[in-house]
Amino acid sequence: MKIFNYLLMGGWLLCIPMPSHASLIQEKKCSECHRLSKDGNEKIGPDLFYAGNKFQASWLKQYLQNPVTIRSAGGTGDPDFLKGTQADSQRHPALSKKDAGQITQELMELILLDLPEKINHLEPLTKGQKAKIKYEFERTFSCISCHQSLNLAGKVRGGISGPSLVNAGNRLQARWVESWLKSPKTYSNKSRMPIYKMADETRLRLTQFISTLKNENKR
Amino acid sequence: MKKSSPIFILKYCVFLIAVGITGCSEKSAEEPRPPMKTESLSSTPIEKTTPKPVVVTEKTRETYQWYCAQCHGIKGKGDGINAKFLTVPPRNHTKASYLETRTDEQFFEAIKFGGLSVGRAPCMPAWGNTLSDSTIHELVRYIRELCQCEAL
Image (cartoon, rainbow over the protein chains, first blue to last red):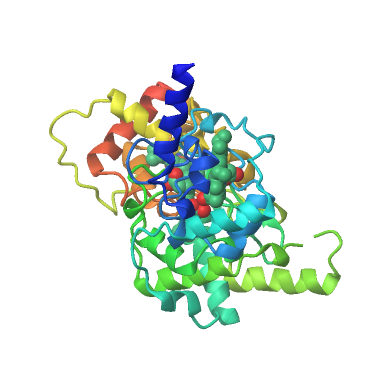
């Protein structure tokens, strides 16, 4: 049973250098479907190597325990993406409350770059501003053709090739949304979304509009 | 909308009129297709300085699959995954009877500047910041290949 001993020793050696706080993501094999660093090819699930920039911690913790569908057509890198056959049947692995808490912490440490904190705390939009930017979201930029959002009556409307933005106000950090709209190439060099050139002011308003989209406003 | 109070509906309609919108995916307030504009767009000239012939390559097809098929469908039939959520359906790029009434310049403008720029629905996004002019010229040729038609 020499081999067994070697295996044991090997495992033991492997364990030592691993800092315990960064281990649960590895242990749960999240990287089978998600990139946790910028290297390598895109995987079937969305990239998580900038999770700390992108998500709100409270949403992550919730999602990891009770996953919901965000991309009803599947991820854009999925070979079946254009066939629209994914539907809601795919279930994401769910974690216990304790594990979700720990993984959320680990994910929030995955920071790609410094984003300006102040964008997360902009003055709310006035009614007039909101009407104007909603018009741009739907008509000037056609965002609604690919993203679900909420209409004035609180009903879900929009295309499904992009991630749903219906709960974006609870899910995403405003400063990341702004940064994505400004330079999507920072995060993905192969995006299916059109690149937009717009005034800084317009981009900030658009970001604020997206931040108002929340499940609790759904009717 | 069925259960909303009449006052809410009224307010909602007033609002729609006020800002003049019906979104791309707002089924309850369907927007009729804008009337066909068949005159050529000579008022907005496009550089016709493409001396070498535009050739459709494997890359052109890939570009179409990557960006356009989301709405226009894998085969260009206008049945992409977003199609059923849009008020104005994506054009069927295999339908010669309509596409031969449109010029290559109109296609080019629609792709580069979006549907609104050629009197078409805003659901068709602008790709001018994403794709180069030469790629767009190739896509126009590719659509002509799909419909097996030329502008009349």
